[in-house]
Image 1: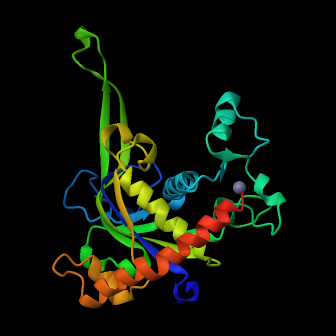
Image 2: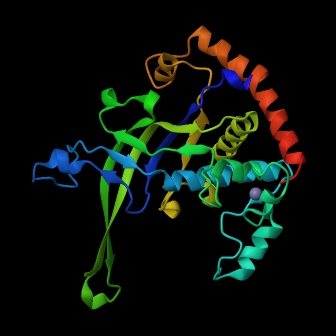
Image 3: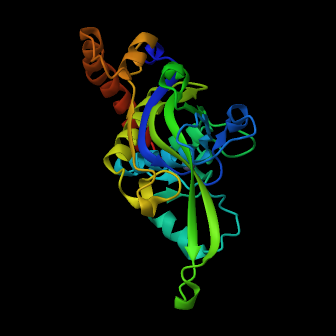
Length: 286
Ligand SMILES: [Zn+2]
């Protein structure tokens, strides 16, 4: 069964507004020719959303899925790190986490499923590679089969003004934020090694994130208090071929009958089987 699944899988990501700190890389230097105005709606700026925030967001969703099945997840922080808030770390350990890497001591050395996927110790890479998302405002140039998205870059400016009446709201400070609006596309994940439980956990983690997308803890990136980072997400059926993945994003076309059949097949034949492998692995302990 698992041998039918490609190592490359795609997650559909849709967000009205995404702010990932200062780490969006734009290609405006190509487009600007020296006269770029960052608030000009005519600008056609594309760029790259790095995978760091995406990865943390996904990991958190997968940890929750493990915990909902009664297992514990690797804590993301080194156990011997000098945490500033020691009480918070021990509270995490009581809330469904084990110290990072404790799970490596048993049998096969792969550790728990979270460790197996995300790696951690001794330059051991995790088995899922998370790629950046390349976005562009020009829909026709977006290749959804390569982990790209339609998205509109804007530089947001915020003024912090004086509260003293005699200052007449004189600006004290100006801050800029990089934001991507109306994001819709795919996030490309590649398994270095594929296992049934990995695919099941990815499906369950994504489902959890989608169901909790307005929770503060499960929004993506910064600006959460302002409704940034509310992400609708779903795993694109791994049985789809490239032309079917493209069709998912074609607003003028619906699913073909063949795609509907594959959806049924995915849920009933594949996912159920993968989920029982995941249940077994979590039952076996971290
Ligand atoms: Zn672990």
